[in-house]
Image (spheres, rainbow, N blue to C red):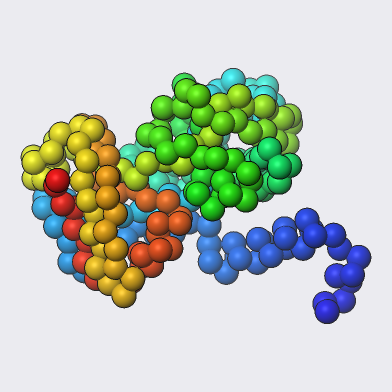
Amino acid sequence: MIAGTQDMDRAQVEQLVRQVLRSQLGEFRQPVVAPDHNGGPNPLVVNVSARHLHVTDEDLEVLFGPGAKLTKLKDLYQPGEFASEQTVNLIGPRNRMIPNVRILGPTRKFTQVELSYTDGVFLGVDLPLRISGNIKGTPGCVLVGPYGALTLREGVIRAERHVHMGPKDLAHFGVKDQDRMKLKIDGPCGVVFENLVVREHPKVHLEVHIDTDEGNACHLESATRMELIKY
């Protein structure tokens, strides 16, 4: 036993373990481009989207105080998007907590928490599978910041796996916005992910988003080929 641990409660031990894991593994996983892919005019990038949340300006002030603004920690792959320095604690219906859930910027017109299935099991939340922004009728939770707490009546989801595409990508794959595709990952833990939602925007980079459960299942970092397949 490590000296002094007999005086520590379970929450303190879990917090120390999380701190060690973050220092060893890093909070952010690098986007993956396999040696072989069918991205066409643009590289096919697959990114594991860790648990995070988006907030409104009003809710940001509730959590961090009047006049609070997001401060950039790290740019994300899509232009203009970033991981902020601000994090909050998330409390579910079982009174279990996930600490240090990062806010992504810029602020939005709605507050939304995106978790993995495993996170939902831990918290006791039956996570609905939704496209970002479709939060009507979804579960809520409590967010605790350094200034105040916020009770969300809705907005906690498991994000549907999806692929961001610009006009050239849509033409290359022969698809349109809201179509569904397959993502085939070859490698030691190869899988086929069904029902990726195509999300069109004129100024995005080609990028697939999967969650941490999905990224771990296929051991994305070991992928040898990635392929988007039209139904």
